[in-house]
Length: 289
Image (cartoon, rainbow, N blue to C red; front, side, top):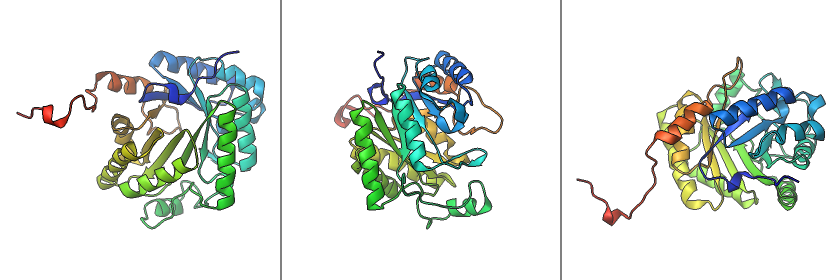
């Protein structure tokens, strides 16, 4: 039996290829093309697959087509709109993929207690996401929901998988708020944490960078921090250099897709070319003249 590979065993930061095809054949094609471009791991969108392929045999065919770790996502929506599915059913599909050999799963921190908001991509959603006083989404503090999340996390870990606990907050966040959310996610026991904030301007970008540095200093688990919005695209390149564990990338751009994520081959060129912000000597040994 092939050993299950995981995200946390990879040298950081690493490149994750997003796989959002509707059938196994095209998923495998995307994985192979992404490998050639330099992907180190994969994000398999279960919510993009046609329902008939959400079975162990087809999922195993996709996951076993690579020796790189494959994490599953299963959102409540896709780019066509909300999906009629319960949290319990989404978890069952995640667990099916785990049985088929996935590295684990990305689950939201409001699993079992959805923090509802405006319809995606509506005028109301824009107003919500640009308001400093809006409540962060995908972050529930309901005791029963949190306990169910912790139980699921332990179950997945005992089965040899990993959990990335995420919060797409859909609101602007200060560096301090980012750190507080990171600590809350960590307290629930996942292997990794992911936070996404809205960036309306350069000031929000700077707060995100402050948050990244704070998470690097304070968290004991790997994390991913990024932003939504045109201004936030640069964070997908910068934050991995400042402590974020990975960057989500596309192999190619498709009509109607999420084009804020960089291309794999472009990100690999950046990683291979940039003089990394890694301290190699103590301050007293540095020379500034």
